[in-house]
Image (cartoon, rainbow, N blue to C red; front, side, top):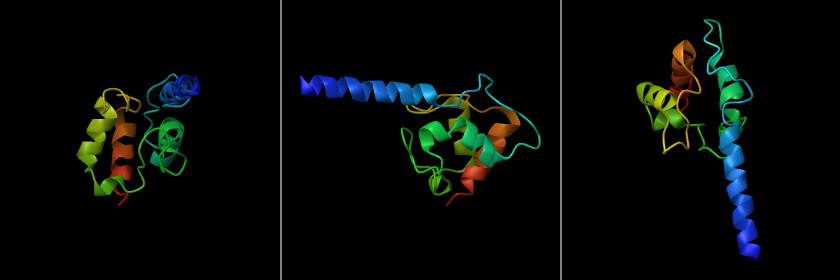
Length: 107
């Protein structure tokens, strides 16, 4: 009985965490020329990747630039990854490019 309850709680936690990805905005992009990539990440990504990019439901991104190039990060932002674990299109346009560049510099 305890195992079933624990499985139910863990499953609900994962579903809620994934549902929270992207923040509370219904818009997928602010797409403003002056948008700060760190603010975009805080708004759109911190619910899954943490406020310090330390990883929560999603992976740690603190040194993601050591693993992926800007182009690879941009592809993940645009197309998602892991069968829906990283949803596609949370950030688009110029904002996606700025965030990819900012994350690629994290080494």
